[in-house]
Amino acid sequence: MKRWLLFLSGFLVLVTTACRPTPPPKATEIFVVTAVPTATPMPTEEIAPTEVLRVMTPTAAPRPTDTPQPTLTPPAAPLDRITQGKRLGRGVNLGNALEAPREGEWGMVLQAEYFRLIAEAGFDTIRVPIRWSAHALKDPPYTVDEDFFRRVDWVIQNGLENGLNVVINMHHYEEIFEDPAAHRERFIAIWQQIATRYKDMPDNVYFEPLNEPHGNLSQDSWIRLLGDTILAIRRIDNRHTLIVTGANWGGYSGLQSLRLPEGEENYVCTFHFYDPMLFTHQGASWTGTGYQTLGVTWPGPPATPVTPDPEAAKVSWVYSWFRQYNTYPAETNPAGPKPIRDAFDRAAKAAEKLGCTLWLGEFGAFEQADMQSRVNWTKFVREEAEARGMSWAYWEFGAGFGLYDRTAGRWREELLRALIP
Ligand code: BGC
Image 1 (cartoon, helix red, strand yellow):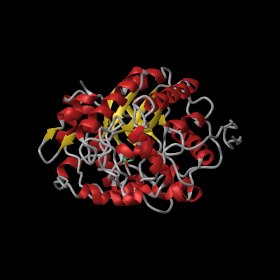
Image 2: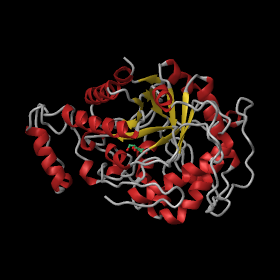
Image 3: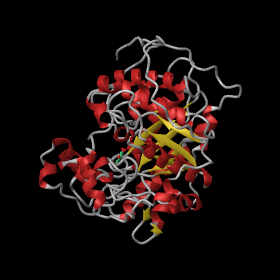
Image 4: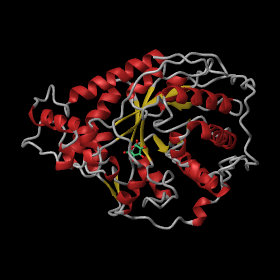
C-alpha cells in the first residue's frame, strides 16, 4: 500500500491489488460478433439532432489546465447519491455498438426499436459503452467529431423518451492503458466536451469516466487521473452523477482503493463481475488459450467431469481449477455459489466504507455456455446483487452475451426471466 499526494487537492489514495485475470483484447471480438451479423445500415434520419436535447454545438475543446480553478458552487438542491444509485435499478448494456471502432463493425447497429423493447421488458437503465477515443482528434484541441456526437445525442434521446436512465461511459480507450501519461490531456479534454454538451440533460443521465481501467493505468495513476477528470468535469457540470470504479479491470477488489476528490459527493460506485471466468468466458476468442474448454456448467461439480482442452491444461491455475471444479462438492466448488457470495460481500463492504450505492455495471455469460447454466448463473448473480441493495446492468443486449436474439427478433425468454422474473 502506498500513499500519493494528489497535486490538485492533496488527498491520499490507497492502493491494492488485482481482480480480473485475463485482459480481453477486443480486436478479436470483432471476429466473434461479425459471425452473427444482423446489422442494417445506420439510417441517416435517425442521427438527426433533436430539439429534446438542448445540446451545444461544440467549439474547440477546452484545454485541460494545470492551474487548479475552483469547481462550480454546488447546486442548491444537489442530487442524493444513494437515491441516484438506487434509481439505476435494472439495466442492460447496449454492448458492441458504439464501443466498436466504428458502429456496425462488430455487427451491431443501434435501432430505435431496441429502446422501446428494453423499456417494455421492464428495464430501468441503459448503459451505453462508447469508444470516444476513435472519434476525437489525435492532437489538441482533441475535438470530438460532430456527427458522432449527434449519434450519441440520438441514443440519449431515445433512451430518455422511453423512460430509461442513460449511462454514458468511456469504453475501450486502449491507448490510455498503454501510455496513461501521453493520453491524460486528451482524455480530460474529451470529458470536458462531453460535460459541455450534456450538462443540461436531465438528472437521469449519468457519466462514467472509464470502463475497466487496467494495464499501465495502475491503481495510483488511475486514481490521480480520475481525480483530475472529476475536477475538470465539475468546472463545467456540477449536477450529474458520476459513476466511478477502481483499477484492475473494475472488479470488486479495485473498489477498496477507490478515492474521490475532497468535496465530491455525487457519485455511484461500480464494479464488474464475470467469475468464474472459465465458465462465463468459455470459448470467447478474445480471452486466450486458457479459456477454450467448452462444456463448463454452473453450478459445479458437473455430472460428468470436464477435461480441459490440451492447451488449457498446460496453464497450471486452469488445470487445478478444473480439478477442483470436477471433484469438489457444491459448497466448496470454484463454480459454486460461495465464491460469488464472498465477492459480493467484499464489494458491499468496500462500498459501505466509501458511502456509495453499488452498481454492478456488467455481468453476463457468453453464448458458448449452455443456456441452462447461463440462466442459473445470471439469476443467482442478479439475486445476490439485489439482496445487497445493488442496482445492475447485464452485459449485454443483442450480441454474444445477448438477451435479445436479433436474427429471430425476439428475447431469449429464459435469460430475460433470470433478470426480470
Ligand atoms: C468489456 C466488454 C466485453 C465484456 C465481456 C467487458 O468487461 O467491457 O467489452 O465484451 O467484458 O468480456
